[in-house]
Length: 96
Image 1 (cartoon, one colour):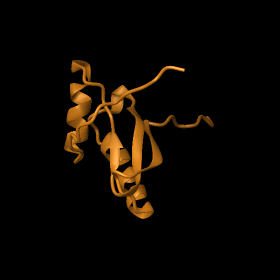
Image 2 (cartoon, rainbow, N blue to C red; image 1 turned 90 degrees about the vertical axis):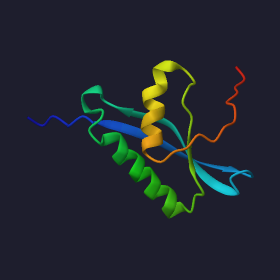
Image 3 (cartoon, one colour; image 1 turned 135 degrees about the vertical axis):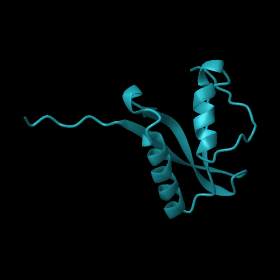
């Protein structure tokens, strides 16, 4: 029928630089998996691919931030299952 398959999910990955990271590192500002495909390995595959990109680019780490709200407890647990650890710090913003 010529219909294009829809993606199961996506991950945005950016390269950043900071003194505390001693050079370049990755940041994941967005990871989304369609609800029907959650807990099926799609998110883990996306994280694994991001790690491969980071290793190829010589990054020291990949960082991700989740809001400190109860509705994100499952998200936090997912990232910890993928090997992420809580590194502290505070996220701040300024509205423009």
